[in-house]
Length: 258
Image (cartoon, rainbow, N blue to C red; front, side):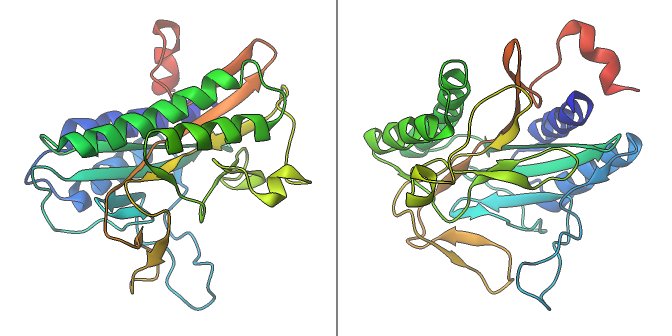
């Protein structure tokens, strides 16, 4: 799975070099599509079926969610502008195994309030990773994540959660960033070697409520305030948790090319 994870990391590396005022999300999506093709990878998002039967499948390799868009935004030809934020989520299957990661990019300079939102969302993902070293149940991690976001004055999106990942992008278990009634019961799961999960906090500046746009995919905040999204694919090994979608170590560079 590290090969797939590194390909996703490289896709974000490409995106990071392109995100700036005047560039379109369609251009970034095309660059990532070309990279995945060069690796012989299968994009996980392209043609992903809509949950509502009869509606259009997802048309792109990446989800591009700008500003108040939380998740599932579609690439377009509108140039990015100074002060925007772009939550880019993408995944690929290589050699039969999947990787999935998201990052919220700044387009030029952003307001202090938006910077605090980004800092909080990235920090709560790092917090979850650190907690995976010591906690035995996911509910223990999720409750700490939820409290961290609340203590910083933001809200955790509850309509969407992380997920198990392996041969398929979405596998059991569901991985929420908050504690629900189901997580207190049979929805909880053990943190043990062999588990691979995509942990992806989505944090809103205002209300946690979201609404669906007429394109049948893009989910935006109900109050129009900004949202941020960070995600890593994380494996629990006998040596501890490992981020499969982080930057390569020196001895892993060949995995980006084979």
